[in-house]
Length: 403
Image (cartoon, rainbow, N blue to C red; front, side):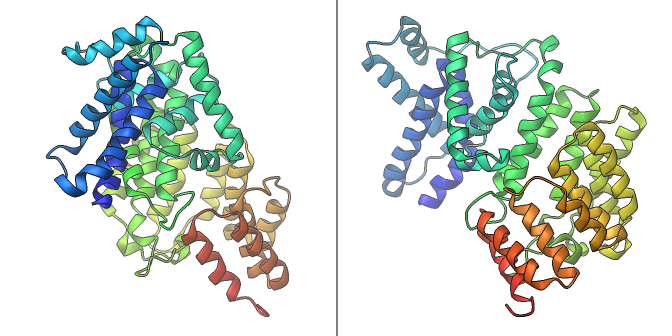
């Protein structure tokens, strides 16, 4: 039965928090009430069985618990008491361009009064139900640093009196960059979970794609919205081929491409072609184009790596940074050889990032420098948070001479 509660948490946490934030206007009240509702579900569902509508049960229970708590806390400002009384009457339908509760909360949390990194982190916490550790991993910062950012973001919302309402249509474009970053980070956390025993969290991938489609409907003339959707579809298309029968990680060059979802590949590639006709490139469109090149190749050996290097050059012009440079180095290694790729990797300053050490280890292995490769694999294993990735790195290290 706890599995059913866990499934409900994955599927409904974000919507429940979004509903309660809108009703009560307080993030902490909403989060605490939803968490308390799931704790009650863990106690009650094993005896009574799951309700017909788990989502409705969670939202109703959380709302009632929040009302009870607010009534008990006499020190709160009257506006919270008034908010609590909303439970006794029907809520008015809020008009505006954003209808979906979760998408609405994303735009609300991306208010310009918040720092950009705080907007993304807070929305990941509220919508995706990600832990502070998972969000810290996505941002490549210590968990304590991320915890402080989240606390400051919530305090800023209270102090600035930022309203929880649907932004006007004129306000949507200014908040778009942060919204796209939120959706993409949710997808990335789902596609390669930062911690735990599973490589993929399908619920987060599905939620990110769903939000991406909603955003494309909302803003159909924004190429970067479509670029992000295409990117997610093209990456998601490879999901079935990423793991072997026992759950082991299968890297891209070794994947059985017959397992790729051709419908998603074709949809993503069609969107990329549509974006090209717009002639307004951006980083998500470029990343989608890179993945479209992979989708064109019938085998790893047929991949046009030189075109991918050129696309990474364009991506770095839009968003210069060590992570994109690391991926470009991988493409250079495929196009020009591992020595050329390693020379680029050695010049990067991302030593705290496990993938830096994993890429360096692989290139050293290909060059026959096994002792150095073994040490680099050890660094990667120590920094990787996902057990499936750690096990893959251990297997690669075990193939080296003298290990």
